[in-house]
Image 1 (cartoon, rainbow, N blue to C red):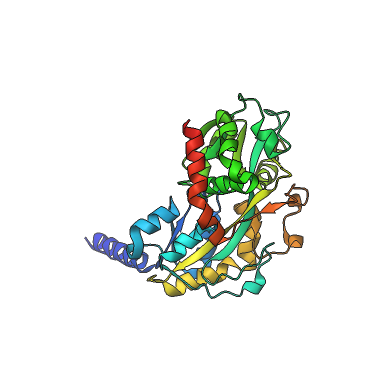
Image 2: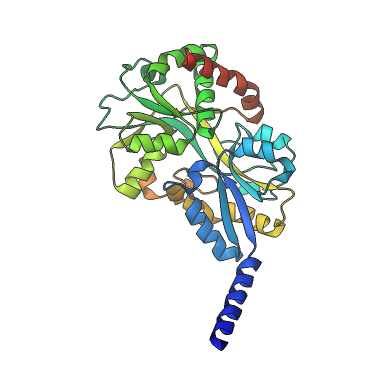
Length: 327
């Protein structure tokens, strides 16, 4: 009986300790906790610093925030891009990040006091040279490829990368964007809800090309020693996007949330980005990037809509995509 009582007491103490561990809830995109995503290492490394329990809740970021409003359980939201930050800002849910922006090494000026960029990159179609011997050398060439070339893209209504694609097409073709989609449509095998599903189809050999990023081949080079995956670089330019972190103003963990925002621009966090998020760090000189990134082709021409421009073009660009693919 004494043994049972002692075990119950110990169990009670452990339960109390677990209950006292503060939880930092981070909303993130679906890719964040995928096998290619940075979530697990960020969770492990930040928990070493904070003495807290980091819990990711993944899925559609902006729709979820709009639905939950002030009832949101998020303390931090990570992964919103400038293509949607105008709408996210209008919710009034976010507080100033309080960070020193002089640390940033982005190729564009950044003065936003709410949304803090933690990485950046450019949209691109990634292919496997063993499946596609003659990849397109331009966006026009992509549209003119045979219809038996199969591509996976993401839905711009549910995916950050999918939205970046329709804005990319808009930036390249302007009033001709819908016509461009009509030419591309026969080659699109599927439109997935998020990036992870599309990229899984590509790595499984179900499609020849996938909408991803210019930096995606780095994963295959570094993690798999696979040199067969490449991003097709187009002279028309590639769409620039930065992913951001935002702090929820009504968070019940303000000190933890502030500590996380500090962590984002730290050298430790930034050095994780190239090989954890497979993208370009927002606050790290190129001299400190992994050596394998030196030969990674990046676009000479960068296309970028700021928050207001993206907000103004978004609905029309998505509608042009929908009309063209529904025919």
